[in-house]
Length: 494
Image (cartoon, rainbow, N blue to C red):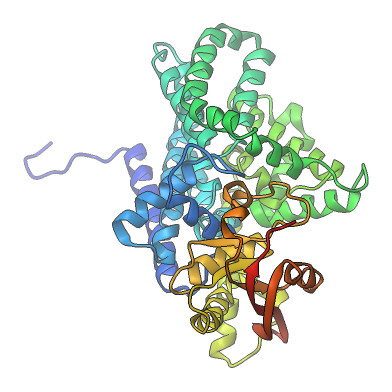
């Protein structure tokens, strides 16, 4: 090599740079969307923001990690919508890099590159990166634990079990669904005779994960295990025992979450297990994907399941599909699947802005982000009415309404009450923290879109002012209608 020649770049280094640059480009586009996309906080996001104002070891419906992340980003950049959501795209960027490392370790750098690019452009990931939710930290923890699990099983890899336990513990602090990862790892070790020598390492990792998770368990112990009961109620059927329509809805929703072409490829792989799941890397990835997906399909049939509940399965599934397509010499199909997913996301996210530019009134059913609209307008209208009643507290009979109103009403009504006068049951964090007896004799401004509740609420006050109406237009002639009343002298629930 001459003095002026440059050292050759290896294939692995080249694919790593491509992965890093393309994933970073996608992430920068998402950060620009957060800054200029003009979407309001979804009610769950507003709820997590409220939690972040008082960091704790647990909350009614979720473990605490999502609130801690919001507390971190907003402490640096303020509490605008983009700051609240900032962690989501950054976490998915990190996950895509871990996906690359998994693919390169199990197969080769080329597979890692395509799997990472496919992951970062999945429709479900694109939606998750535009919101702050428990899925983003969960998927990073899932991928990190899987990579560490792969390394721990290699000769001299014993120390990697520490990272397995650490990632799994953080995953449990993000979302209880991390337990599916622990189950998948145990099943893989149990099903394959050559893997059973890893039981000791797995047991140590499991113990570490439980130690990291323990603070949330202790919080639940002191709060009647409300998080566990909420998770159980979400999964249990409240109607017929068998729900084929729910199953079909969830099944077809996965074409949207994972992408039409990639989910179809996954189904082909599943239907030919002896041919496509026999190689060791494929079998490992399948074990970390199919049990979770199968469990959610069963839950959807017996009760109901949200489309994102199977999201952790797709960390492994995208690696499996990418490796399968490349082995079949179908790189063009892989590229086509990525392009199709990007087109679906661009169409979905750009539908409303494009309609506004064309002066069209887009129907709600064609706007996937319609539930992120209208909250700021509602908050502005309620703010004007509250200004007419100094000293009145905000009252709502709906968790979602109260969460977003607390964020968008100015000045922010942190001392607010969610009506819980009928059953007295703890249904959310508002109910968990509320002490209605403190507010006897106080005046409230009721905001409700449940007409059937209003008279029962009014009956618990000494006097009620005139009725105001707020109508929030959502597009296509659809709207959300609210009744607002000034109520004086709260008598208590009973």
